[in-house]
Image (cartoon, rainbow, N blue to C red):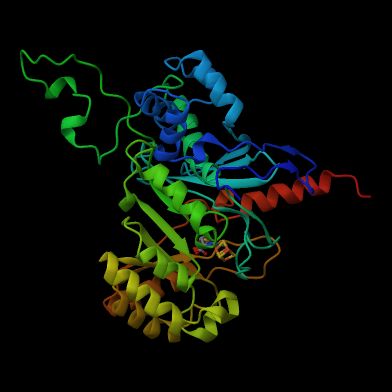
Length: 420
Ligand code: SAH
Ligand code: SF4
């Protein structure tokens, strides 16, 4: 299927009519440029359109005021311009916010916005990490995770990954009092010489017109760690990340994008060969096959003997520190026997270990260890010369682990439906 094309027709589950035109936000610069050249549009129109989409985040063709009306009509007849419906927004006391979106075919996905500074003096930070989903549901069925509980429904299209970022940016900028469609600060990757000069940078008598510096983006880090297995939706993921990364797109640096995987070894090797310097996180959750297999069925397909060499290839290719995510689950993977093999793997792969106390999921039996047990596990790893962080779950009170809000909402909605 054309990656830009929405799944057309009628959704058999929701009965919703769905869009069949390709979505403009799934298109890269070259695709738009070649279409504009077919339409005999001047080349500068391509950048005007891209700025409206990704830097000004407008939600309608009509808002693109510097494009001729005939071109807007042609665009509207050829492409869709999808916006999500915000179904639910929850924010916890420490300002982690969770957004539940309804897509064009009625499917629900979620994105989580986590503040950069955990509100040091009680105020909210203005820079954030956004956790983005890549699939509706998940096929990998990790035993601790809410995302896979109802199975896999479909892959997200590139624009559905991109739009999560734009939609959150719109809401945050509105809350900050910015005007709809206000231009965002260019990316850090744009050379300083090409940026709009800030008044303070201009020398006296400078011939350049002074324009106020545009506001900075609200989202300055992306983690691909929401619902779904990103590397199982490889092509759409890469296409979306390239749009989000590009200076003509949202403009977020590749080093500020972390992809989290449950360990699809062949796709990790493929990602190592891509030119971008994306960061990689591995949901390890077990330092031996026996423990990992108990909670992650994917380990049977790609056991540690296959996963570790793929990670080593990624690490040596990118020269980047990997991250091991390790959810601490009481009585499953928090035993002292896990520490030594975990430390050995981390040292060998030059990986830091991010310990995450388990977030309980309704209907699943697992529990987090006590705080003291988590601290002791972290301290012992540190003694073994491993770089460790112990996450104090910021979103514990808003179902922040992946898939939890969607699951909760779907179950609540199902309980409201009349039974046949
Ligand atoms: N499929 C990918 C990315 C999404 S899951 C992957 O598995 O890496 C990303 C992470 O969500 C998991 O590794 C885990 O760190 C976290 N997670 C999932 N369920 C959780 C829970 N109940 N408590 C705490 N973290 C959880
Ligand atoms: Fe899927 Fe990741 Fe959840 Fe496993 S942890 S079920 S791979 S989303």
